[in-house]
Amino acid sequence: MASHAANLWVLLGLGLAGIFLMTKRLKKTIKADFGAFIQKLELLPPPQPAPPKAPHPLTGLNFAVSDVFDIEGYVTGFGHPDWLRTHEPSTRTSPVVLALVEGGATCIGKTVVDELAYSIHGENKHYSTPTNPAAPARIPGGSSSGAAVAVAADFVDFSLGIDTLGGIRVPAAFCGVIGFRPSYGVISNTGIIPVSSSLDTVGLFAKDPSTLRRVGLVLLQLPFSVQRNPKQILLADDCFELLKIPKDRISQVVTNSTEKHFGRQVLKHENLEKYFSSKVPSLKEFYSQKINGDSKISSLTLLANVAQILRRYEFKCTHGEWIHSEKPVLDSAISAQINETLDMTDKEIEICKLVRTEMRLAVNNLLKDDGILVIPTTAYPPPKLGSKEIFSDDYQNRSFSLLSIASISGCCQVTLPLGYHDKCPVSVSFIARHGGDRFLLDTVQTVYSSLQEHADTVAKSKLSPNAVKQEHSAEAVKEKGNQAYKDKQWQKAIGFYTEAIKLSDNNATYYSNRAAAYLELGSFLQAETDCTKAISLDKKNVKAYLRRGTAREMLGYYKEAIEDFSYALVLEPTNKRAALSADRLRKVFQ
Picture 1 (tube, one colour):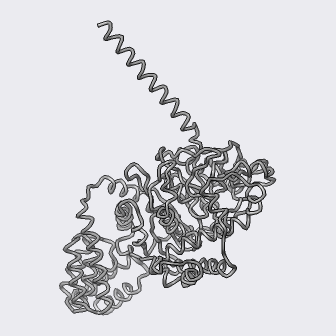
Picture 2: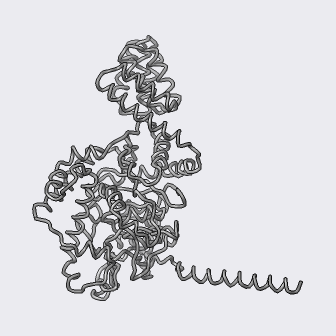
Picture 3: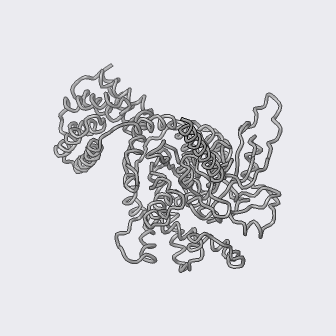
C-alpha cells in the first residue's frame, strides 16, 4: 500500500511538473499582449466641450496604430530595426492619428507590421510574430498584423493599418475581425511611410460594425446622408471557385442574409473573369507585352500580376536607395521580391496604370451607386506558423487574384467574419464602387447581425453533399433557362425552369422566372400560380408581385392586380412599372 501511494505521489509530481513546464513554455510563446505592440504610448484627447454641445464623436474609445504612422517624438519603425536605427524621431503626428485623437479617442501604442510592411503573412523575425487570438497555431496575416491582433484580443476598440495588397483585409480575415479598406485617396496618406503610392490606403480594424462606422465617418469626414439599401448584391461565382473551403459555407450565409433583409430579387450572379476580360482591354495589352506562354491565363491572374508589379516598382522607386545603401537583413521571400531585377519599360508601367484606370471604371459601372460585390476575402484559411504553403504559386495566385480587385480599382472593401470552419476563421468581403464608402458602411451595419446568425446556422447544419450538389445543378439549369428566355424560346425556358424546380423546389426565383415565360405564352393561370408560390417563399420578391399583377389583370382580377402593383411599389418605391400599372388600373376600374 505504502509503495502504491508513493508511486501515486511520484506520478502526481511528474504531472504537476509537466503542467508547470507547459505553462512556462506557453508564456514564452504567447506574450501578455500577444506580441501585438512594439511600443506603448499615450495620446490623450482634448477636454470635452461644455454642454449643450455634443461630446466628441469617439469619446470612450481607445486605439492603436501600425508602426508606419508618424507620431511626434517617436521613430516610425516600418517593421525593421535597421529602419529604426537609420531614421530620426518624427517631428509631426500623422493627420489621420490627430483626427482620431481630436475626435475623442485615446491612442495607446504602436503595433507590429511585417518587414517594411511588404508581406501579407504577418510573420516578422525581428520583432517576433504576433499571436493570432482566433487560431494561435496559425499566422495572423499581414502587413498590419499587430493592429489586427490588438483588436482581436480586445486590447483596443479599433486600430489603424495600411492596406496595399491586402494589409488590412488578410489579417482581418485570419484573426476574425472586421477590416475596412476605404476608397483610394479618400483618406490622407500624409505622415505614413509609403509602400506603393498608387495602391496604399489607410485602413481600419474593429470588432463590431457600430465602432467601424463611428470611426469610419470621422476618418472619411462625410456629410450626413439618408441611408440607402443595396438594389443589387452580386455574388462573384468564379471568385468563390477559388476557395479552398466549401464555397457554400460562405455563399449560403450571404444568400440567406440578403433574402432576409432585401429580398431574393436583389441577389445576382456575376462572372468577373468574363466581365473584366471585356471591360478592361488594357489587361490584354499587358499580357501581350509581359506574359509569355499560356494564352488561357485568366484576367484575374493578370490583375494579380499587374498589382504585384506596381507594388514592387513603386516600392523600389521610393526605398531602393535606402535598401542599396543599408543592405538590411530581410526575410528571404521579401528580399527575393524587392531585390529581383524589374525588367519593365516605361510603356509597360504606363499599361499597368491604364489597367488601374479601366478597372475603376469597370467596377463602378458594374456596381453603380447601389450595388455590392461579394467575394471571398482570401482563398485559403490561415496557414500554420512556419508553413511553406504561403510561398506556393497556388497560394500566391489565388490570394492576389482576390485582393487585387479592390487594390487596382481603388474601390472600398469591408472584410466581415463569418465564424469558423475546421477551427479556422472564415470571412467574406463586400465591395462598393469608388467613393461609395458610406453606402458600404451602412450596408454592413444593416446586415452584420444577420450574417453572424446565418453563419452560425450554416456552420451547424448537416446539409448533405448530395443536397449541395443538387442546388448547384439547379442554378446551372436556371441559367440555361435565362438564356433561352433571352433568346425568346419561351417553351424551352419553361422546361429548364421546371427542371430547376425539381432539383430545388424552395427557390422563389425559379418560380418567378417560369411565370415570366408563361406570361409570354399567354398562360396567365399558370403564371399566377407560380408567382403566388414565389411570394410564399420570398415575400419581398418584387418581380413576382409585378408578374402576378400582370397575370391577374389579364385574367380580369383588377382589384387583386392593383394590390399586387401597389405592394411592389411599397417594396421598391422608385419602381416606375409598378407605379404606372397601379395608376392606370385605378383610373380605369375605380
